[in-house]
Image (tube, rainbow, N blue to C red):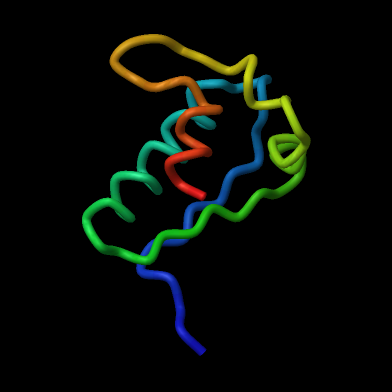
Length: 74
């Protein structure tokens, strides 16, 4: 079994857009650098797996909208 180099736990959804954005930005950037990164969705964060839910989360520059981050990370 291969374990992730970075495991990010996330328990928020649009109720805390900063945490969601930072979690997926960290995961994407770690993967971009060659690390195996995973985001574990807990509690309210499971809603992020619903189609279209992440489209409404965008905290603005310098961060990408969460939908774009998901597309890059997954």
